[in-house]
Image (cartoon, rainbow, N blue to C red; front, side):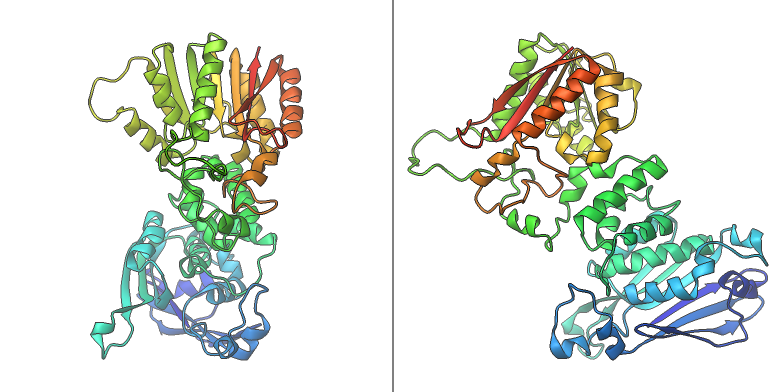
Length: 499
């Protein structure tokens, strides 16, 4: 397993100072799974190349297997891990180049802070998505990416390409940033890790991703893959990225999360056949048909439609004509507000740029046609941060939003919506966890959606709603949405807050 780093600085051998490895020496570093060697095949004044060669011991590797690693007998010893750049190489980098990854160089401090010309080569990199996948993750970081597919067998062209690429990255990048990007993205492209993930893996990701990960357009996918699709760890990492970088809070972005639902999570598996909403978009699971239902009866109104109708009715009842949909997603409720001539001013906000693009297309805001003058704006915003654009509306709707928020961040949403924006009416809908037993294929403790952080029982929702109403000067009435089961209640619960 090989990694080479080349620079063409005027004093190219200064690469040795930055890496803290002398160009005239071959150095050896024992790892739990083998041995890492650092040497310089080229050490001239105009061009210098440092190489990290990782010699993996298959027996040692088996002894460091993660808990979730399957036992494939001989496959434990005969596999691609000794040859393909993966989390093993990333781990070796973290040990061998630890000081360089922190950006420290007492001998050349200015150089350590300066982007330098670099060429990085990985001869065999696992990359299930092929060259496009490598381009997707590295190009936004400023690299020129060359990813050449490795054939299964050069002697049999008809066999096609393997899942490996020869990756070459060129660009002017600070060495510490380059090393940290490789440390994160090698296991991301492989989409596997050789060790069990502990909670401190989130700290490693945040530390290595400082300055670049939060701004990456695929930060959600990178975070999920790096953390092996462990939902709790992913949520924690995305929340911390939002706090540290002031970035849009991807933890509230269901569109991004749904791109690659984890197949290793029991909840996701239980929902694998049920990710279709009322209009064919990813959504909630649907209840099983009632026994004895006649096939010729009129179609049952979907829960999503019940929910929209209940929200519209609540707004009519409260005489609220100027409405902002907070967490508008792809704009399904916005479209219904526009269709209803009762409403005089309509706006929508969401954390997801992708969802907002769908909402704009749904409302024809970007098609050059005459737009409805009642639609004030559809804009990106996070409900955990104060925003003047949230103010000035008679009503705010949070339809199936709060359950996508990490519980420690709910207080911030409460302060923003009920305290700062302070509309006269707030309508909140959220799943009723007690009703989940009525869904086929949804196991005990599972939630209806892979991005839900929690789902409240009726008592839990009432307790939250009563506390928020009291704290911010509102009254709240509770409305069941959907068929109200006498034992477990309606599938959706709605709170209508009035100030």
